[in-house]
Length: 258
Image 1 (cartoon, rainbow, N blue to C red):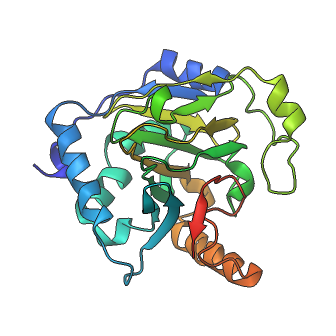
Image 2 (image 1 turned 180 degrees about the horizontal axis):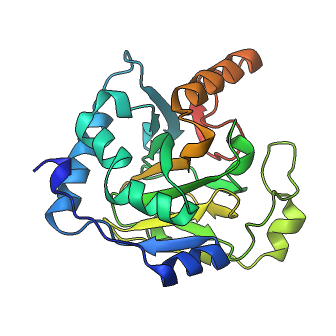
């Protein structure tokens, strides 16, 4: 089965209204054999070595070194690249943005057993060049409270919030919010605005909890994907942080292996 055979579901007015009000939306773009297909693609990427132009990041866990993230894989996996840049995901991103969308960046978070979580943050401070953007978490494996699912704050996506020195939301604001865990089953997608506060705990279960996170920007702002990765690597190099962190903000709470 190829990416062209994956199903497409329209996002209607009620779903768009829910997203606009709350800053997040749960959809079901995949089912059954399509989930298995997507899992097989992630299995392939997980086995790639570190010698390509894609970006692998590793962390130290109680079970030993583990892959925690892969980025910039779209140019090197045709089927997954097509899935993320055409069809249901691009259509949904466009509907939620209210205008045609284009892929801005993509990552796989593996969250292995014993893997670190992510501190409360908004994505927007880590995104360069763009003002209008939306992300989704496509669950490759069931994302549950027991393995560190995402937690979100509803209706708090109108502005960039006060941040600490790491670029994450201040402790005072974190304590004032009502955080809601959102369990996402394999094949479902949790869409969220780049200013929606979110966090996730460590994976204390015995199995990995993998997810793909594509981010889309309004096409009217340009196709900026290559520029994003060039800028990210340049900022890492300027700060002497190559290999010591996964993001342009300090949200990852695992122990990186350089």
